[in-house]
Length: 181
Image (cartoon, rainbow, N blue to C red; front, side):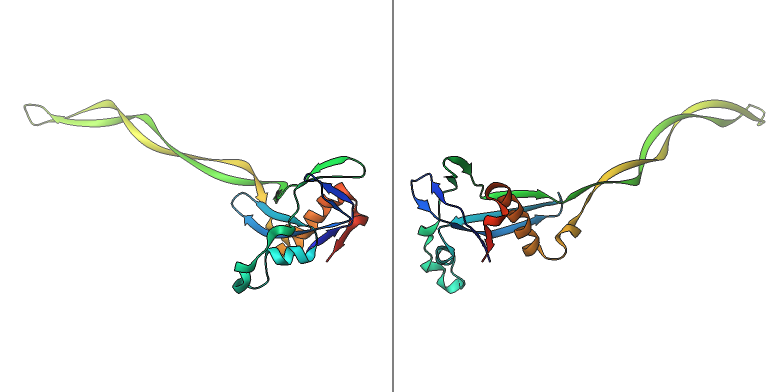
């Protein structure tokens, strides 16, 4: 699947196209940072895209990427656009979630200790002294964390990725000029 952009463009190398084809060629979900990364390529048409990355791994040695078009182009009488090949989408939500965290540390406290000694007659003599003793202390605090919202993918990274890219391209070329192929 890909998207045909039905807009006349002139690429930076001087070639003119009545439309062009874009497809996702890779996506990566980085759960640790809540980010989806999408790699695209742009071709003169769907057939050129299929030649660049044949459907069978066995045919990879016969790939022909000559139908790829430059990312820099102009349309509508000179509107310059540099199409990106790599897009990042943050899947973190703005919802701040309270989480209780415990901190532990060591403090030194004075502690009165009883010292027992004996005099020459064998009688017990009690004295008191102050000694510094390390004590482990803990406390809780509430912190607010940003939630990674992988649920936005709704279980289908393919559909989600195309919807996000299609939205980006509709802002540049107009939604009426995008066609799923």
